Length: 139
Image (cartoon, rainbow, N blue to C red):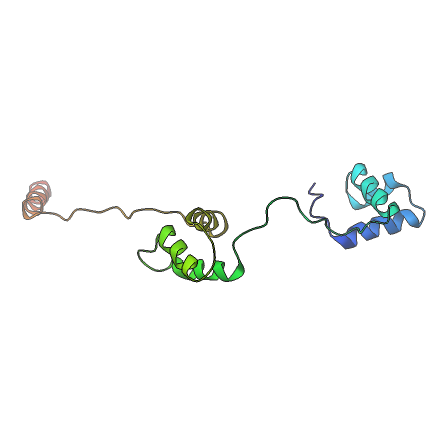
């Protein structure tokens, strides 16, 4: 059960059901949420706190919406490494490192670096050998 992504309406509905006289255990069964979650929401309501999502902990993201657009557009261009994209973004005033660009490309877009394998072309000698091989096997 993914409790972290419960909407604010669902939380308000749970509190409303308890206010309406329903037991917390029944509310948990009805909404298919753990009892502890319903208890936590009710305690929050009792303390007068907002039932909406709390501000998540951790460092804020450094990559802005505009920078994401620049990275996405650069993705299709040939010879655009993460280092070159990061340099371009720094010139435009976004303080984004190449590691951040790489992480965004990998996690969000799903792009990974690869080198196209070089397929060597056949030499005249190899073509001749193939042709002779086919002619011998044909009869």
